[in-house]
Length: 95
Image (cartoon, rainbow, N blue to C red; front, side, top):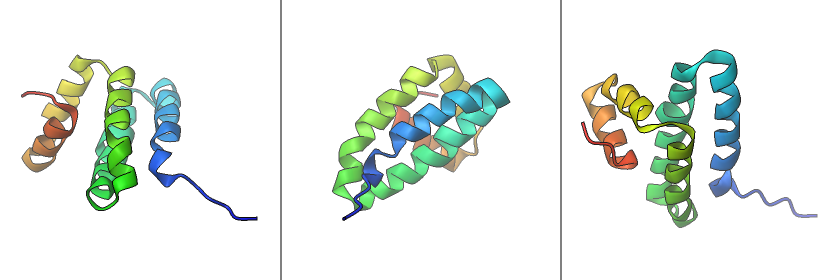
């Protein structure tokens, strides 16, 4: 039996986990987890792998379903310039 994991679809589980993190540990932890860690790593993988690249727009849309524009802008504004610029581009958030 061959085990095949769709690693390029792991973002769906990460989004589900984010909702739990938000409930238990607060919005800041949820933002750090999903955007500061998972989305950035996924975007790096998307640069190298077409399967990840194909899933990136769906992941980006899911982030917008979980967090509202004020939460996203506030989080991104709190980051260092290099990370801020990268996330502004990834999430289409203006400064």
